[in-house]
Amino acid sequence: MSTVDLVPLVDEGLGNSAYLVDLGDGRAMVVDVSLDLRGAWQAARRRGLRLAFAADTHLHADFVSGVRQLAATEGTQVLASAAGHREFAHTGLHDGDEIDLGGLRLRALATPGHTHEHLAFLLLDGDRPQGVFTGGSLIVGAAARTDLVSPNETESLARQQYASLRRLAALPDEVAVWPTHGAGSFCSAPPGAQRTSTIGAEKATNPLLRARDEDAFVTGLLDSLGSFPPYFLRLAEHNRRGPAVLDADPALPSLDGARVRSLQAEGAQVVDVRPVRQFATDHVPGALSVPLRPAFASWLGWLTSPEHPLVIVRSEEQDPTEIAWQATKIGRIDLAGELDGGMPAWTSDGQPTSSTRLLGADEITHQRVLDVRQDAEFAEGHVPGATHVELGTLADRADALPHAPTVVMCGHGERAMGAAGLLEQAGHRDLAVLEGGPQDWATTTGRSLEEGQ
Image (cartoon, rainbow, N blue to C red):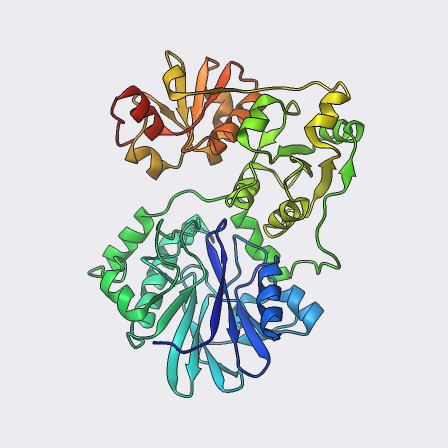
């Protein structure tokens, strides 16, 4: 059992964990921190610690790394794979290299698979391994995906992932496993899994570690791969070059209605982050609904294009700083601002509005039903006869869908409202959104859901 004084810093929305290790001498090390460093700073200051080291296991694809920001603002020593060829100051590590943390040691273990340059970091107290920061190699109940580099390399990286996991499995059973990717991550963590584990527990329960051979492992891993946000394909290179150092917290400048209309005409995307019911009542024509909730950053990155700046519409009680940070940590620093006064100011100024009908499960009659959940969710149970298009692919397929009365649904309504906005932008009309999901429909109607694709 590890005796390391470790503080997990969990991002529920992205499904990731960073870690702060108290080194016992007034210094600390953080591992895999995003550019949203508020949690790390808070944990360090609460304990009176200086962030002396910051280690990155790989070139993160799902968030902007915070290590360069720490180096610039706090003099933090950055530890990362030499094979990552980062274009900013860091200590480049190779397999077997060790860093003296002052009583504890950090040993780099080459664990390619999730990415080519991936390192795990074994934390040792003397010669006794305490835990291993596994990043995107071994994760609780699975292994992270290998299809983020190139479709042509997905299988070869899966075979490297197999070797990396076997290497980690050779560590003593009591060694703690501290992965970066966890439940809710699009990097293939299974839902509901614990965020940390031990080598022994993973050997006993992780189906990929229990695969009979390399081919079975590769088949199991590749069969588990679902879709992922396209911004994943941009951020690794962004992190390799080094994100710009922020000189202030990100913010949302105020924009009056006339400026919002002008920006929208020039191609800016209006993103409405209010709850679904508020958006349904009235919204800026052409706005996209991406409600502010734990999964906000992922869907913002998935549904908006980096080629167009963002204009935010929020409700009075929603925190503009939180919205700005959520966007910034996935690389969306092109925030033009927010509609000053929100929708009340827009409507009082006599500007046009749109609305979207919300339906209860008992109100679905003869409309076409469009289910925009992920493939695995749809296969587990859906309204019989429903058309299935994942939300992440809808913008590219909207033109091919028939223009007919349609009820859009997901699990609760948030993704469905985003889908309705995309369909409206593509010229679809007579749309409604189901409040709730397929289980609500089954309970209300007394009918059974259909399984499979």
